[in-house]
Length: 547
Image 1 (cartoon, rainbow, N blue to C red):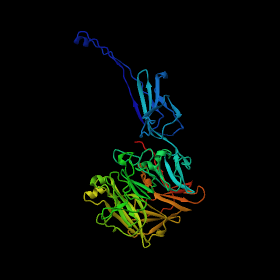
Image 2 (cartoon, rainbow, N blue to C red):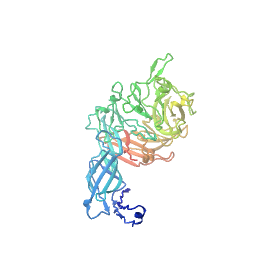
Image 3 (cartoon, one colour):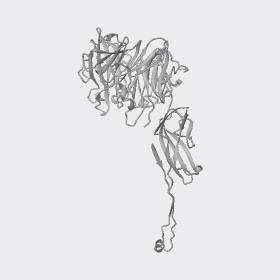
Image 4 (spheres, helix red, strand yellow):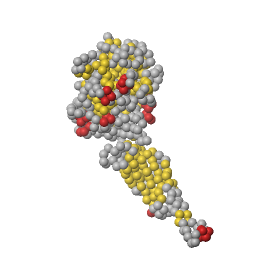
């Protein structure tokens, strides 16, 4: 608690100047000083959390008030600690002018600085105390589950607000959003932009969530996932086309998405008006003509390094069955080549000897793990992370780990990507029947699900076997790790998230397991929730933080 006491001592000095030095000799030092009584403010904590649009009561104890209380004025002032969304978001606002606070909070959810002031009108002195005020809703923080209910979008949420668990069901039921069939994914891009570049702005902070469906895509509002017409993906496309992305990811300011037509990029450093540009999933033939290729529905990139100028985006070419990449970001400006498209990944261009790039293998799965591999040579203190890919050849699954760097490195004669891992997965139980995979962002573990059973693979060996972990009732529909942003949640990135469906209405279940050790078997979950639709995707909505 910060208590600020502003004192003003009134000093009245009469100096009689009568004849210079002799007049000074007669000065008796008869000054009148008035001590100002100190008022101590008690009862206001360091941090206050309250529900928006609910009554908040803050009792205050003031020690040192004079008998005549009419001489005092009171003020409860809040100062907004987050970016304004519109002109209605005032920088500061007086909530009340009463001694104690007992009123409905009608502020937009988010962090505020609360300043309580007591003013002594007679002495023109004021006393202040500050606190952090967090205005929350039942959707401010918690698990958000994209579900399918008979093929339609259903967005559920489990949150704990002020110690009480709240289940918000089918939050988009009353929305006019046009895309409500075939839910595919729920993606949260970074709405932050900090001076130390620990994170960068990748999307409009008022609507950082992308909802992807088979019919189309749209953003959703940060507070309660409200939908607006201007959130439709077509307003982000240069040609206003109704794009239907299957996957969206980002490296630093540079975003990439995959649609049935191919890959599109966007440079968000240009600001909120940044549009998705023309598709770039093509190779250059010997005669310099474009050969458009079909690519797998995922983009590999370095998702945790915010300082990249020309981040490498990796695709799997389904036509030629090979790894290819696009040197994105500022590559065109650095080289003058604005039409590079995709380039074939090669052993000669790569660092590391974990494997030789295969050709002719079938795509199975790809994931940006967020697993740190090496410190960036260009930007010390920032790390490259690993993208894992599973390919199949003659009935055998092969795992490849590749750390994608900045193509700016290649322009300076250094490798832009590194071959980090290889594993033959033949010894992994029923791996070719796996429906879902998940790679830990914090250690060398891979998990996969087969018929309700979850297995773990230790990636510290090139010929690993699978260890059975646990079994859940019903069908596993989602298996993943979530890379948290807020520092207080760092350890939670170890948690393996499992969504399953036992059938019937509200048969979806969520279990969370802690997967810290590479060797210790996971036997039980640390968190369980039920009553959802058929779970398609899961994210964790972190609250807006206050420094």
